[in-house]
Length: 262
Image (tube, rainbow, N blue to C red; front, side):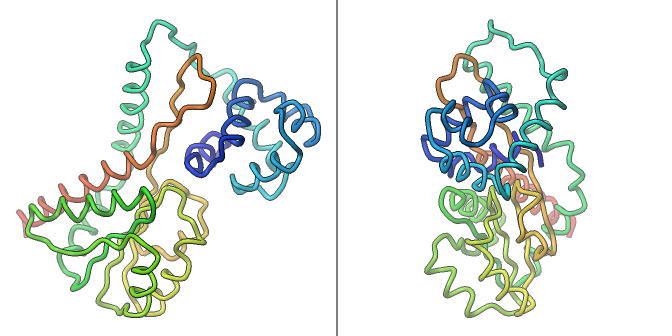
């Protein structure tokens, strides 16, 4: 996963200072590429510690790895960047970014996996759609979407529910997890319990490097996108959960097709 992709999936967890650092690096990557961590902190109007925290939040082991990733990304993409169209309105830029993300989603080879998931939703006794924070909306959307197909199950969206669910899992449970980052801190306990109980695990995220991925029986890695808006003071992010929300509707659609041909 390259530097920009990491920024995209971790964007919502960044502090205002980290977002400012991010913007400055996008505007001038030489701040990192050509300087020590102390010098980079000064140039970003912050501190060495803030730069290091930012790098580690993006899952780099330290400044050296972070610096290499920034340099590698910009060396690879420097000649491939399109010339910004300054005639586009902000609305046009936002719409284009969303359209490009959905187009990338449509190119993924997930046809067989989606059909398999539709079959599992129909066959399992207990189905749980799981999401924490804003990802809870995506989990709830899947629940609501499947109401139209007379499929009723629950969303698990907070820590208390996580704890209770971990204690009652069996092989009759299908867990469908929505998470942009695939946070191990959030999901490891639940997934270990699910694996030990023989539950079926589906993970839908945007982080191909997440340590929780090895728990998945079925995995969907969706595309993420940072909007390339011009004249920005702070980096602008199109919320990646929009793609997860959209994918909930895709799952529901496949479930409807499955029922028609059952």
